[in-house]
Image (tube, rainbow, N blue to C red; front, side):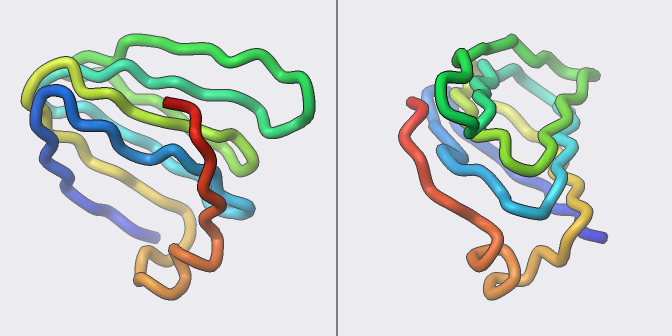
Length: 98
């Protein structure tokens, strides 16, 4: 439903949230990031992966996630729900992964 091109500087941190309904696909066009994720169910282990240019990461609903950019980067965020501010904020729950 939605597509957003996002540019980030080295050292930037994004997300630190989860979505109750939305599913995201983040396709790295340029640069790299450390993607940290954790199921919001109690006791779930925090995990991470490095995502580089040409790679994609999938974030289903109820998975807390954060992104730490390892270099200046550009990625495409594809969503299954509307990306307008009101819809996005209603579906977003803030957390502190990073």
